[in-house]
Amino acid sequence: MIRSTSKGAYLALVESGKVSTKRAQIVRFVDDHPGCTRNEIVRGIPGMTVNCCCGRVRELLDCGFLIEDGCKKDPVTGQSGNRLYVNRDEGDMAA
Image 1 (spheres, one colour):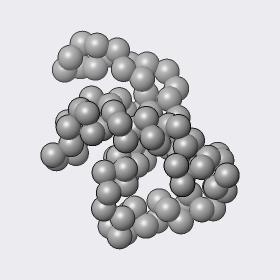
Image 2 (cartoon, helix red, strand yellow):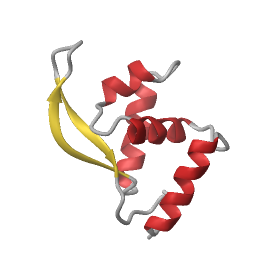
Image 3 (tube, rainbow, N blue to C red):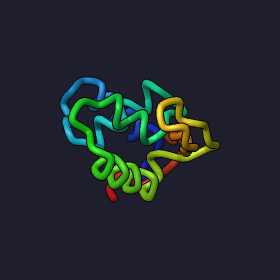
């Protein structure tokens, strides 16, 4: 399990731009837009596709780095989506 201090260091790398993966882009976006949905991530990150976003979000959820908490209606699609947050507690980022 990765401690919150390691997550802080990872977020610092993400914010510095030294990590340029799709997962890092998603983490940065969710950290900047707490409670966002997958659709908002796709619309907010240039070049991000739905398939890429959903796969990377699932990986980040599975390793405990992101959490889902609640739903909200998407203003563009009208569909409900799960709210995403960076998990400030423990999780395994190595997954």
